[in-house]
Image (cartoon, rainbow, N blue to C red):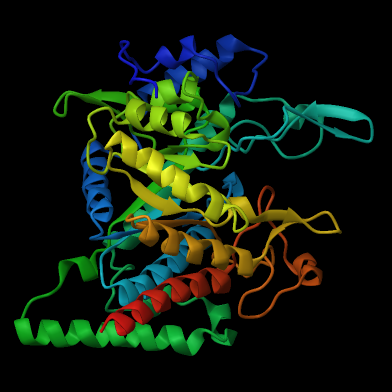
Amino acid sequence: MRSPVTTPWHPASWQTKPAQQQPTYKDPAALDHVVAQLAKLPPIVVSWEIEALRERLAAAQRGQAFLLQGGDCAETFADCESDQIAKKLKILLQMSLVLLHGLKKPIIRVGRMAGQYAKPRSADTETRNGVTLPSYRGDLVNRPEFTPEAREPDPDLLLRGYARAALTLNFVRALVDGGFADLHHPEYWDLGFVHHSPLKATYERIASSIADALDFFEGMSGRRVHEATHAAFYASHEGLHLMYEQAQTRFIPRQQRWYNLSTHMPWIGMRTAQLDGAHVEYFRGISNPIAVKVGAAMDASWLQGLVTTLNPQNQPGRLTLIHRFGAKDIEKHLPKAIEAVRQTGQQVLWVCDPMHGNTETTTGGLKTRRFENIQRELELAFEIHAQCGSHLGGVHVELTGDDVTECTGGARGLTDADLQRAYRSTVDPRLNHEQALELALLISGRNQSRRTAAG
């Protein structure tokens, strides 16, 4: 196992390391000019919010809270409009309500939003009909149209991404501060098309039960439950584009620490988690709670090196490991990962991403995920952690509040033929509102069944 990195750190020290998944700009001076502008703009989040999230994640490590992290695979600039943002918030609030009812513990709500504009790609270029162009790397980098002009990385898109991230999070904050997330009024989160869902009655029973319980408690005690009226909401994104992340990294004198103030909780993806790479170098120096995606390619030495490098002081709430093995491979790989981390003596928050390891392609060429595989991986994750003396403290899902058809299965039994009806993702398939709520109900129901059996 490698020892933690001890070399001096500053926000640009990652530039001395090999950097994966970074776009190549034709005009480096133009990029530097944009980065300098970003560095002067106000931060999108503040350090006290980040520290509050870290404390909540530390509680989840102890089994006293549960992390719900969800949102789009990749946001687009076009998504930055009020209805789309409200729909994402609504489905996350609905899921958190169901989880709260079933798990009987606080739910930490973290959106994959307000900055999820860059995506890693399996190849630097894409070829169509004999024409080869740079791959589309998300709206933060270039544009999806297959033309030389659209696919050229444009540094001005970094400024547009910053502006839309700030607008998105500010709107979410305004909704939450205005009472939108009040557990007394789950009717605020109504998604019109859910009225036709087979899950409607179950969800409404849960919402009514929680509202009644709050009314009873507050009637007896004569005081309001603050957490029920003002639910905290945090943002996260993959910290992929390192120049963008560097520009919003600030030293906070009051804290005597560096923070990435573009988001509350950035994460490192599988493709950029090399121990000697630029992303690990950057992430080791920021004080945000951070996450790392963990897959079958990570052996014990690699995983142990990441844990000790990224959290050398074993700070509670600092490091989340999001495992994504797939339903077929989780039984083989997850126990080894749990044991590897246990040998370091480090505390981490274990979270299951049941989406990425279960991606497949239909005969028609569409990427999809089958709900039964997503459900199976999540069930196995709970069981394996329990068998290994660990516990699963959260779930990480790609979802949308829209009525899309991108993943098959679920309550309506969507088939491959149904995917064409409303397939809108430009990158990876997402759970629709109904499938996302069903997944929350499954987690909730599983925990209630365990409590009944134990009693």
